[in-house]
Length: 381
Image 1 (cartoon, rainbow, N blue to C red):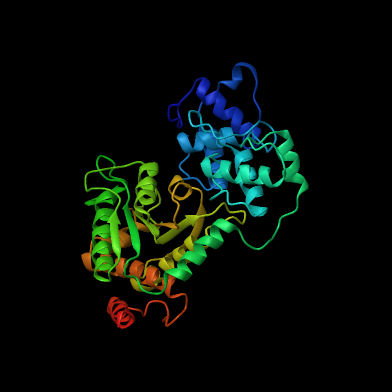
Image 2: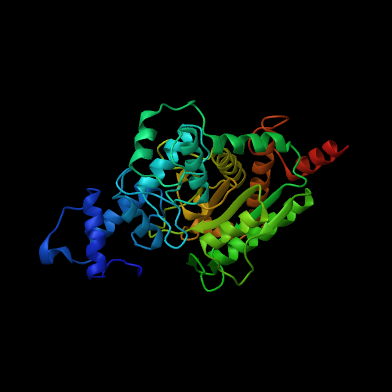
């Protein structure tokens, strides 16, 4: 399907209008009026839907938004669900299945609304335990069994508890930990451009500075793209998965039509309804506080999102939006290499604090790169 935005018209727009009406974000239309156009009302409805679903809120219907809109029409039990390699199944019903299996103690992976091999494996285990036909298909009988059972435990979800345990067992030292640094955009995709600053260039510069500091501590730091490359979100996530990364850090800058918009914000996997990557949320919080304290950037807080970069990475992932290039003060600061050093130091300290788990930690903004190196040396001895 082609990307749709304000000003477009035709059957594709009619489908989008119908999907938005189904989730009560637009009034229902019929007949010839159903074709309509992608007007301001549709754009506002798309933005509202994207915000509700934790998608990038740009008012444009691209592949992720289109898939989410189509999936919103399904509820658990409305159709059979299975792992189909040639035609993957996505939708709210898949998300509900993943949530239910997780509640019952089966590891369906990170709930992302996509029926993949891990969801199938969890479903087969459930069917086996229930004495059902083990076919990996969620049909009427499987749905009935899922609804009849009570959760085995509450207060934790296996996939996220496993993340926490991996951090605890990894220990406080940074040496040997593998981090994928993901500079946003690249190649022909320049991201936000304001005056002499381009987001793709800044993200690359921040990534190289962070890479150098991480390698100095003994970490394995890998950059997800070359200086002239622009991989897709899925390709970036796959790079991290193939590398067996412990953490994934995506670096971006922001922009806005309002010149007053400014500050730093951090994002992690989360649905906004209670399902969240606890390690991702913890790391995002550390990064947010450290960078804001060291740089003086406005603290725009942390936010849960279901962006593809989060749903496809198997390790905890965080995206940081460091300043608005369209804001004069943020623009001035980001133009200064010494300021970018402060940003990368803050991110490194945040990673260190994640692995310290409170042991020998220091107040926000006071831990230095020299302290990290000293701590690593002391632990080595």
